[in-house]
Amino acid sequence: MSSITLRRRVLAGAGALSLALTGGVVGLAGSAQAATKTTPVHVKCDAPAPQPDAEGLQDYTITLPDGAKAGDTVPISIDPGLTPVIPMFTIETVNTTKAKLLVDGNPQTVTSPPTPSRQTAGQKADPPKFDGTIKIPDGTEGRTIDITIDQVITDADIGGTVYTTTCTPDPRPSGSVGSVAVEALPKDPITTKLTPNSGKAGQKVTVSGANFAPGAVTCSALLAGTPTGDTGQGTAAAGGAATCEVTVTKKADQIRIDGAVTPYKDFVFLEDQPGVKNPVDVEVLPGPLAIGPQSGNPAVSFGKVTINGKPQSVVGQFTAMSVQDFRGGSLGWDVTATRTPFLNETTGHAMAKAQLGIQPTCTVTNADSPSTCTAGAPGAISATPMKVASQAAGGEELTGGEFAVGGAGMIQLPPFMFADTYQSVVTFSIA
Image (cartoon, rainbow, N blue to C red; front, side, top):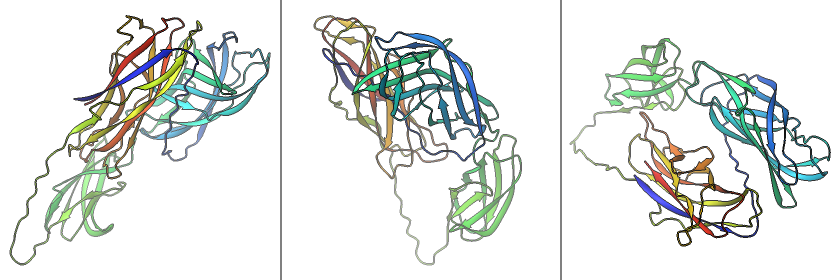
């Protein structure tokens, strides 16, 4: 395991900031029939002073496709409805709303774009409708999954100052506000393996696949995308695993189980060449799995805060770290984060109730990387390792590459503390 340490400092001083942790997703699934559901949810709303807190019913109208495959990214439309918060003043704001959802128990956040809004004194606040996407979790094949509300946070920008209202269902999370039926066959059929993946004319090849409908299957050899005429027969089991056997008699560069999506599996056709044989050998050694720089990143200031008797938030940006996976295999990796308490070791002061959160990011920095990476869900960093990024194992496929891991950070401060300089040490580790 390799690790790198970042130092984070907070000065109790002047000014206050708040953070809108946002996330983006791409690659929408194909269109499906949409289903709309309106659900009353009892919420308790923590409003910024001097606005009083409020609680009551809020009608959430959620539009979702009525069907999808596991692993799909699908559209969602959220109309929060009237909140129980009644503004004391008529004001013009620019609102950003973050709906923290649980998709079959998996935390996901849908964030609205900054939207101009007029709040009228004496009338319930009416947040605008907004659209986003959610990902259907793997492992949900053949079930109808529920979407529930864990929390909704609205940041209202008034002339550059952000005021945050947090509405939490009671009980938390809410009951189901929408559902999606996940197909029993979750993913497109694929060709997974050739045994062997090379040979001369007359070579028998066993072709494996996944996600096929149970029953008979056929397999084909191809050259430059065109079938060569060499075909074979096989079967797919009830779980979707398929096996087929084909004899390669003509030059081919790929073999597939028919019906599979691209890419197909590469096949090396060996042809005898006349003349003197002179074999050439090369040994490729595995490289490291590493996170850097090993010397650590510079400290990032989270600004200054003036004690005012209320909880406050300050923001910063975690400097991106490089991840290199040069192992030349099919293994995955996880990057996790832990931290120490906020302390001043000289004065002995501590902020035991302070929390540090991160909105992780992970990007590919080498276009030749065979793998992609996935950022972890937003959350609080503590003494327990929190996953901030990962690369999935490849099974039969090559994994690896070069990546950058970082993200936006937020420190939530208690209402009272010693005015002092505090530091927490955040450690990012890879395994």
